[in-house]
Amino acid sequence: MNKRHTNRNEQNRRRFLQTTAAAGAGYWVAGDVQLARSKSPNQQIQFACIGVDGKGSSDSAAAGNHGQVVAICDVDERKLKKRKTGEAFRESKEYFDYRTMLDEMGSKIDAVTISTPDHNHAPAAAIALKMKKHCFVQKPLTHSIYEARMLGALARKAGVATQMGNQGTAHDGLRKAAAIIQSGALGTPKEVHIWTNRPVWPQGIERPTETPSVPKYIHWEQWLGPAPSRPYHAAYHPFKWRGWWDFGTGALGDMACHTVNMPFMGLNLANPTSVSAESSGHNRETYPAWSVIHFQFPASSDRPALPMTWYDGGKRVPSSLLEGEEPAGSGALIVGDKGKLYSPGDYGGSWKLMGIDEPKDIEFVRSPGHFTEWANAISNGTQSVSNFPDYAGPLTETILLGNLAVWSGKPVAWDAENMTATNAPELKPIVNREYRDGYSL
Image 1 (tube, rainbow, N blue to C red):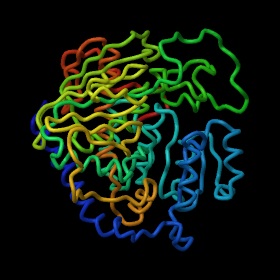
Image 2: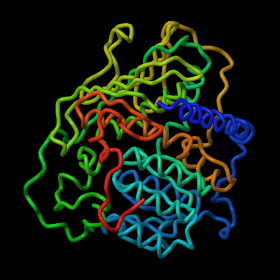
Image 3: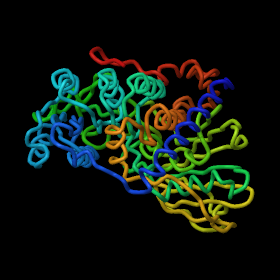
C-alpha cells in the first residue's frame, strides 16, 4: 500500500476525532442540545426522505422529529399512502423516483435521508451532495468500494453534514470500548474476530425463472435504479434483495457496519492490504450460504499489523478464544497480549473484559443520539462522527473489500490508494459497477 495514503488517512481520522472531542466535550457531555424542531418554522431543517418503509420508517420518523419533512419518495405506493397518514407527513409531496423529487424540490430541501436497498444508495446520495444537501444514508454507505470513495469526496467538496446509519456509533458503550482499546489496556492488539447470525434471507440460490406480473402498486423500474434490468420477482422485493449481488452486499455488507464498528473506531481498521475468503461457493447471482473472510491490516502509528476474521452463515469464533465460553450469535472479540474485549451482539454497546480489570478514568465523547447528532451538525456547521469522508466511507471500503475475495475465490492483494486488486484485474467491475442509462455518480 502507498505509505503516503495510509499516513494521510490516519492524520485525517485523528484530526477529525480530536476536533470532535474538543467541540463535543462541552457541547455533548454537558447536554447543551437544542434540537432543530425547537426552532421557529422558517429555521427548521427541511427534509426529503427516500424510502419510507422498513428502516426508512424510523429514519423518516426521526426526520419528522427534527424538522419538517417536505417530500417523501418510495417505489411502493402503499408505503407512501401509509406514511402520509402520519401527522408529520401530511403536507409532504409524494414521489416514486428520487431523481424527479430532487429535481423538483431541490430549492425547498436542506437535507435528505436515503433508506433504500444498497444499490440505490450512491446514485441518490450523489445527486443530493452535488446539490449541496446534507445527507444521511443507511448502512452500508454504498454497494461498491468506488462509490464509497466517491461519496466521501463529494461530501467533502460540498461541505455538508453527512452521516451513515450505523446507529451504534453514537452509543456510549461502543465509544467507551473504543477508548479502552485506544488506551492500551489490552496491550498490543494481536487479532480481531467478528461474527454474525446473518444471513436470515436466502443465499446460495439460483435466479428465478418465473416472470410474474409487477404488482400495480410497485414502480419496478425505479426499484431497479442503476442495477441491470431483470423481471420483477418476490425473490428480490421487498425483503430478500440483500442476498443478490446486483442489489445487496450479503451478510457482510448488511451487518459489518455495526459489528466491525467498535474495533474499527478503536484500532483504525482502514485500508487492508489483502483479503481472502472461504465459502460454500456461489453462482455469482447470490452470496454464499456461509463465508469466513480473512483481512490483513498493515501497521499504523498506533498499532502493529494485525489480522481480522469475519464469520457468517453459522460460522463463529472458536470458543477457545473466549476462555471456553460459547459465543453469542453475533459479536466482536479483540485480542491483545494483556487481555481481551468481548462484545456479544451486533452493536458494540455492551462488552466485558477478559484477563484485565476495567481501567479507570476512561474519557470519551458522549452523543446526544445518532440522528440528533446529525441534525445538530446541520444546524451548527459541524460533522457527526460517522460522516462520509472521515469515517463511514473508509469503514464501508474496508468491509466491502471482503466481498471481492468472496467473488474471486482467491486471495486478493489490495492497493487502497488506487482502489485496485493488483493480482486480480478481473475484479474491476465489482470495485466500480456500471450503471444503467439514466443513473450516474
